Image 1 (tube, rainbow, N blue to C red):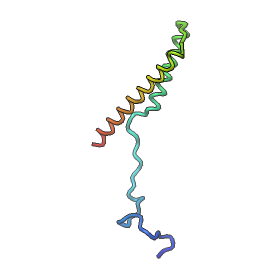
Image 2 (tube, rainbow, N blue to C red):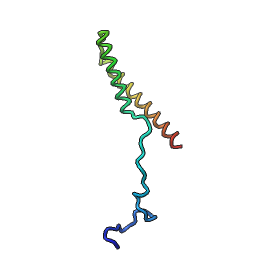
Image 3 (cartoon, helix red, strand yellow):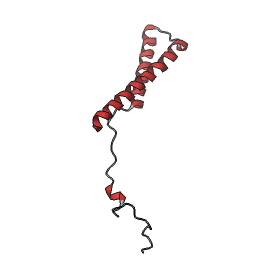
Image 4 (cartoon, rainbow, N blue to C red):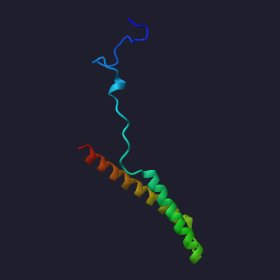
Length: 91
């Protein structure tokens, strides 16, 4: 027995496992974190523009919780779309 050879085979067919592994698959669905970050940036930019042009004051004690709930709903919708697309893609 060779000193570098393992005592047990790596696979039942005695072929190295690394030969059967293909390139990593790339994600095909939407990236939820990038979409959420873009929505937050657009919301903040809209609030800044509204404040500068219309002298708008934002009450974060009322807007903050609604914003967090809205972002949560967006993330749930993005996840649902990703799951539906994955099921249709795998079938």
